[in-house]
Structures are given as structure tokens and as C-alpha cells.
Image 1 (tube, rainbow, N blue to C red):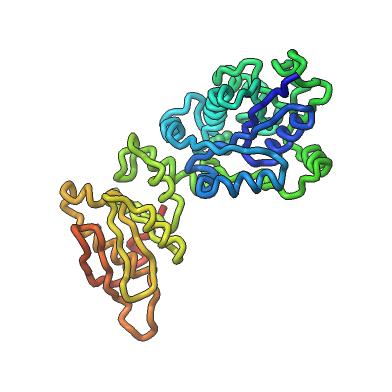
Image 2: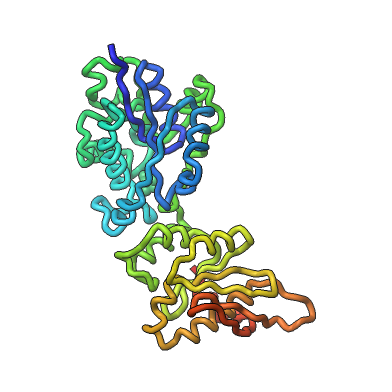
Length: 348
Ligand code: SF4
């Protein structure tokens, strides 16, 4: 008989690893599908082969990466099932991933889907009724097997078709992790990420920034938010200037380099040529030069911030020259450090 294939929705967390391994142990070929967006795990796209190798070595699983950014940026405008405690649209996020995974089934000749969801583990997205909604709204009725809680749920196609023995599936329930840890030991898995996860939309510090850009508080049009905007939101010191301009300052050399790499045609860059300090990016500033009478004042504020966070030399004038790149070439202005009292409220 031909071996049946299943696609696993693979977050990289312990539950998804265990669900995949359990189904693989029952004779099914499991291909893990890892979705990334700028809100979680985007950096994996820089080295997909490295990630594949790591997942194979650590967990014995084949994995493929898919970038879901485009759909995800749209989804955040108005998720049908709302947000969780932060800016996390967990139910719609899962519906989107399950829908996309279903579309991929034909490509990989897969017969069903797996997810590591555990009944009652999370208040919003893993209640019995919500799990049902995810299945229904992603058009996966009967196709989505949750092996870790399957015995507590209605049988799915792989069970009724006899591809999988329902008796070998599990009945995990609730928030406790002890059964997962025990199972991981049985599989010889010791190195796995903590359950807190890496989704920025659920992060109480970072997610309000994302909510504000979506509310239109920045010079960016919310309908035109890009992957680069989100990536910039997550690097360095962030300032929302009184006129709506958005300034990002690197906190170290690595962040300065990242900011330079992310700069686009309409952005302006500022830095001190003669002193160590931040590289600053004024987002979308070139495009708005003609629209704003106060651009000169804005640039002075930005230069003052660059000098404020730059290295001071004891006994020397704290003022410094700042290069502004992007106004049809380069120019220099001299600036004193901006007083903390002036900019405290601009910090995001
Ligand atoms: S925490 Fe983030 S990645 Fe996980 S379901 Fe919620 S929105 Fe999606």
C-alpha cells in the first residue's frame, strides 16, 4: 500500500514537534510546513537550508518554509475573529495557515493535515468551539488531525479511513506541560524552544507599536504597510515625532547595519561622520519633503537625537556634525544633543 503523506502545521514549538513525530511513528510520511511572516521567524528565510538541516538533526523531521507575509499584512487590518490580549489575531492566523496548508496538499500529494493544538491549552484559540471554527473556516472539515488531543475529539478522515489507528493517538488536555515533556523524553528530544514562542504580535511591549502603525498614527498609510515597515519597527530605538514622522535609531553597530540595509528610496539616513553613534532612518521622508513645510525643523530634531545617543568626548563640545543622506545627495548640519525632556514623549 502506498504510504500516506500528511502536512504538519509546524510552529517549531514542542507541541508541533510531538504531533509530527507521533503521526510519523504510525507509518505516515510527515512533511512539516513552517510559515513565516515579519512577525515571527522571518529571519529563517535568510538560510532555509540551514533551518531544514537543524530540524532534521534535532527532531528527525523534513520541513519546508513558506512566506505568508503578504496575506498576513492584510489580515491585521480587520481579523474576523478579533484580537487576543495584545495585537494577536490568533484564530484568524490559524485559519489562514490551515487554508494555505490545504492549498499545498496537492503539491505534496498529502491526504490530511496535522497540528499540535491541545484542547484547552490556550484561552482563546484552543477551546473546543474555537478549534472547530478553525477547521470549518479553513475549509478543512475532517481533514485536520490534532494527534495530541485526538481521543477527546470527533474522529477525522485519517482515522475513519484506517490510515491511522485512533487508539494510538493521545488525550492531552489543558495547560499543563508534564505529559508533553515526558513524551519528548521518550522521543529523545531535549532541545526545544520555550512555550512563550516568538510571535511579536503577542508581545506586550512590541505589539502596541504594530497596533499604532495600523491605526495610522505614523506617516505611513496603513493600507500600504510593507514587510520592511514591520522589520523596521522591531529594530533599535523608535521615535514618533510630533509631526508624525517616524525615526529609527540603531543602538549598536549591528543595528546600524541592519537599518542601512532596510533603507529604501524614500528614506533619509543620518549619522555622525566623525564620532561613533547611531545611524538614523527617517522613514518615507523624501516623499514627503514637498508636503511638509516643517521638514527642516524635523531634520534638526533628528540630528539632535543622533548626537544625543552618540559617543561624547569628555571635556569637548557635545555638539557634532551630522550627515543627512537622501536630499539629492549628502549635506551636513551641526547639532547639539537634544534634551531628554523634549523627546521623552516621542519614544515608542
Ligand atoms: S501567537 Fe502569533 S503566530 Fe501564534 S497563533 Fe497567535 S498570532 Fe499566530
